[in-house]
Length: 409
Image 1 (cartoon, rainbow, N blue to C red):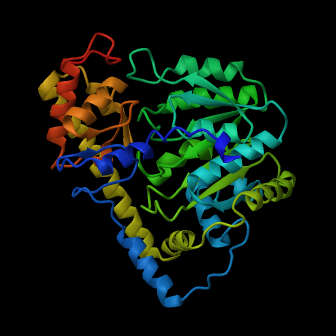
Image 2: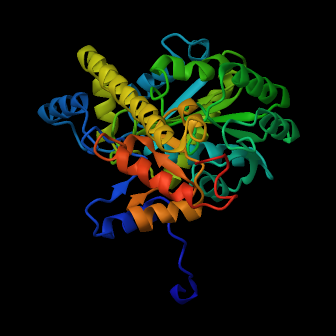
Image 3: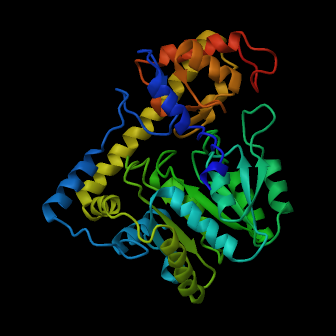
């Protein structure tokens, strides 16, 4: 059978990382993979995580299998983090939560639940979106329907296009919504736009799948969750797919969770049983260590306070680097061309550069970004930001008229 297989295309992000690693140039700069880096260009282990790991090491916790839906204490903590301490949906028994290996597995479980509710189900997905989203949903048997996310200049969300796509969908279909820090663009709906989007979702009878991979990276833990909490006040069905890769720095531990919110408490035993049935066939039970780290931090008040401080520091540094990049580019290209970057949020920035220019950055300047033009802002620091700005200015000066979505220098 192997002779009949063709080579799968490389992942657009991790495949590029392999090219970066093989690049012998000492001045190379990696702005591809979405991992946080500190001012020294390192992906740190948070102090609260190190303290939690020491506590776990001292306890010598068993390595026995977890339950199918993971650690009960972790799931309860995740529910509180996303829905708040006393959300009516929790009090009414309309919530089921399961620990998963990262946000990717949470998305796949949500996709399987939508797909199993009936044949021919569709999920609306913004275009652009995270490169792995279409594959996850297609693998579950959903029809992926893209909707135009950005306006024609690529400098803001296209609200009219979003509402038109929602209104054209069928009741029971799903819609993927990046709650905060849209990947790859960095452009989010503002509060009034969110109110309209979710009103149309309710009216059309769609099931939102909230991709919540960056809680705490836009404004704060609570503010970033507000849209989800308000939507779930009504008797609505929804999935929330959370990840602790970014806000805990637990990338390799694969820690996440899926939250299902139902209309009635009587529905939730069946919902929970089906989620566990899907988990059992995919990965059987989640890994324990990362979940125990998160649960330990949440159970120790001093570690929780420490985490809040470290998360705020990461958020602040990313914001400072974004503003600094805008300033550096303004000094080379004038105020207008890249000013829209300042309105973006989170780790990523849709720069407006095209695939040709992205390759020029890599080939001529050893600056690695993905072909979509997405930049990992968290990879910028005082040691590389001038070189990055110089390189972007260089590749935009020689473009043809269609090279970028907006006017550049």
